[in-house]
Length: 104
Image (tube, rainbow, N blue to C red; front, side, top):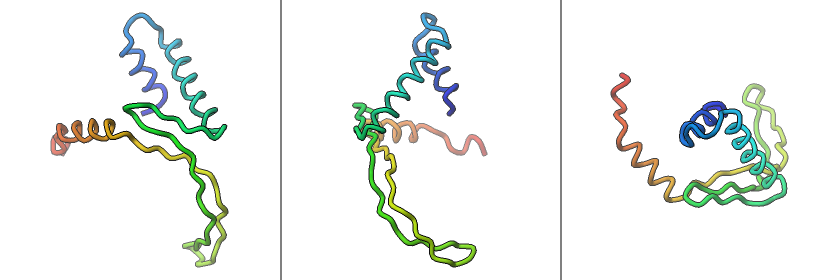
């Protein structure tokens, strides 16, 4: 799903009271707020959906698969998403209702 698809879905959920352009501004505002919060080191918790957090990955020594040479990978900060229990249960319910053989 692209951001344009997300804007389309949100504007469809809201109904005829909002334009797609206005809805795009809302989606952009939300995504920018998430980026700013993570850049400031804050965690983001959306109840019923999940939590975005920053984690530090340790530096390590890896191997270049082409040459076999050892390469030092520095430590870095990564963003992780942990879905809520409610989110996971809804996804598994949706998964149970999908007929995976219909496309075959």
